[in-house]
Structure formats: C-alpha cells, structure tokens
Image 1: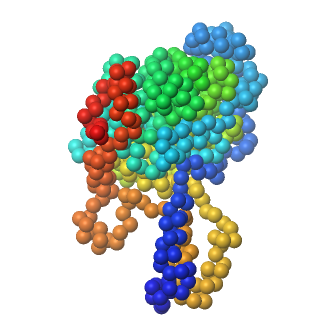
Image 2: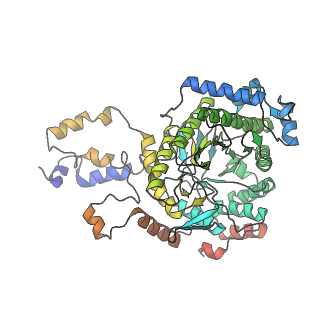
Image 3: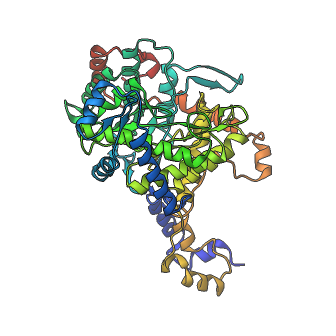
Length: 520
C-alpha cells in the first residue's frame, strides 16, 4: 500500500491544494435552511381529492361555530352565510376562489446575513423551535419547574448558536409575568435580544400586537420597516376543535391580518378526542378548519401571508392522553404537509414532540422519526422540532443541543443524493482501482468531505478506547456540558445599548440588563 503522503504528492498539487479544496467546500455544506423536501407522499392523489371534497362539505353543511360579530360581518359580506344553528358556513366556490388567490409564499427574514432567511412556500423545508411549554426540565434533579422569562431568554441565546435550527419560535411561556401586556412585550423583546435568527411568538392579547410591531420598528430603525421586512411571525390557535372559533386567538388573527402581518396559526384537533378516531376523518376536519381560517384572513386582506398550519394531534386511546411521539403522529403530520402542497399554500407542521420526560432513548427515536418524515414530506416549517419533552408540557436546554444534532441528520436525509456524471466518479474509480487501491488520499475525497458529508456537533463517533479514556460520558452528560459552556459565555448584544435604553423607556421591559451582561 502506498503511504498517503506519497500519494498526495502525485496528484492535485499536494496536501495544501487538497486542504484549499476542503476550505472552499465549507461554504457548500450538505444541509442548510430551505432544503427541498416532498419526496415522501403518504397520500395518493385520489386521497387528497377526497379529503378536499370532504372539507368543502364540512364547511358548507356544518360550518364553524362561535364567530365574533366582526368576523360574521366580514365573512357574510364576502359570500359566507350563517345557518339556522348560528354557524358560519362557506360555499365551496367561495373557498376555492380564496385558495386560488391566497399567498403562495412569504419570507421571515433574519437580521444578520450569517443566518439564513426562512422561505415559506413550495417545497422549502426549515426547522424551528416552538412549543410554549409551561415548565422547564431540571435534568439534575429530574423534576419540572415553572418556566420564566429568563428561561425563554436562555433558550433563545442557546438556539442562536445551533446551526440546524433555522428559526427561534417561542419555546416556553414566562409564567412569572402575570400582566398580559408586560408578558407579550417582553416575549417580543427576547426575540430581538437573544438571537438575530428569524423568530416566532404568540400573544396573550390581540391589542398588544401594535406595540410589539412598534418595538420591532425601533430595532429596524423606523416606523413601517418591520412590515416591509418582517423577522417575526405571529402564532395563535384560532380554532377550538371540533369546528369552533376561539375568541381570543380569532381576534389575534383578525388583528394581524388587518396589519398585513404573517399569521402563523396552528390548528390542533386531537384524533379520538376533539377529532374523529378515524385518521382520515381527522384530516378532513382539520383541513376544513384550516381553510376557514385562510378564508377569514383573505377576506380581511387578500393575499395576506398565512401559514396553512394544520397540526392534528393523536391520542393514546388507552388513556386519552396526547401522544406526540407516536408513529400515527409522524404519519399525520406528513399527510398534512402533503395537503398543504396540494393547495400550494405555505405550510407548517409539528414534529419532535416526544412523550418522554427526558432527552433519552425514547425521545431520540420519537423525535428523529417524526422530524425526518415531516421534512421528507416537504413541510415548509417544522415547529416544536427541538427541546420539547413531556408531550409539549416541558422544555429541556439539553434537549435543544441534542436535537440540533438530530435535526442535522434529518436535514441530510432530506437533502438526498446528487447523481451526475461528476458524482458517478467513473474516472476516479478507474484511477484508484488501477492505482493505489483506496480513495483516502484522492483529491475528490477531501473536496467532497464537507459538501457531501455532515459531521455531528455533539454525538460521539470515537473509538471505545478513546471514549473510556475520556471518562465514558454519555450524550446527556455531553449536552449538559455544552449547555453550561454556552450559557456561561454567549451573551449576544444584538441591539445597541442606546437603543435598548430607548426600548426600556418606552415599553415595560423587566428582563434585567444584569443577566444579559451587556458589553460596554
């Protein structure tokens, strides 16, 4: 066997030339925001058409209950009607016309070119946090405690360092903030201080949206700038299944639509509880509920960006409890991504919602399977995709860094393989087969090392002897150490201190500057 050093001197200009190729390849990573999914299609075309027709029938003959007077006036003025039961109903042609005129894509911008914008539409796939859990996992004591504003900020600055999470969605509710205005504006504040990645948040009160937009305008340098380049999408659950509007979140949907902001809704009936146990029936119901929301948004402001976010949850029918890590959940979310593509609407689904209480083996297989199937199905945004434990009741900092590795692997699967004359490598095969007999020192190997292969940040690929010599750490121990390291050192100053002072003068910001360790 010819030594690697001798081989490298005979081709490609030697070691330095090959390393230069590798350095160049770093900018051509195999995974990135906006990969193209859609390879997995659990539903046949005829299935999609049946679900569509069933959804239209539901909206026409059953309708949606509990619409506010404002929404009834808007909808009936556009061609909907109220039936004898007081339910808001939508003729099929009205819904089909609205779908035809709805926004096909939108962008949630980053505030730093080092982070990618999140393009929502077509087959683009992006992974995001979310969840709005009410507790944080204390891994050391294996207990849960109420989540706080400080926890949300810590989640944000941790996500700021995790390459495979493309958007920071609101991971936890600050349960220590009881005033709803203070709550909403401090969540908005965390979105601009913890990270410059695209963000997502929800509101406790619709009337606080305009103040949050004013805060975002200040960050971008002037009134009206956020509407032109939105870096936050606004979540909410305007449907209370089965087939009812929820007043508070419906008002939020109306407010964001009036302002032309991104309505990042989530509709989450639970099969066997608030939707039929027959999974196809759940798909029909949730599609109808999603189309109703799409109709309201476009009646208020035609073409206003809205995520067609139908997220049917699954029950463990032995107990009635939500089961986010089930195989049925993976299947249903993939089907919903496909339904969204059937309508050519911007989509989101939920994945990685493990039922395990810890970031353990159960969490690993539940999260991995649901995350990769959602990506392969072509969901534009996959939320809840990192950090969630306990069926969305808790958030884990260690889970965030572990799931970042998992999401990198999921994205590598979604990215697929490039087959071309170059990658088929016939000349390389001939050269190596007739020469040294292995590919380790070939220029192609180093050139493709970064473009074709993904390397974990946390997962262990060392030899058993090396692992033993390092103290035999497991994944949870490595994750704990990474969390400690990041939270001890990464205090990003994503806005100018003078701007921060101006924001604090105008809005009731309660996150102490001391915990943010502002650089002077």
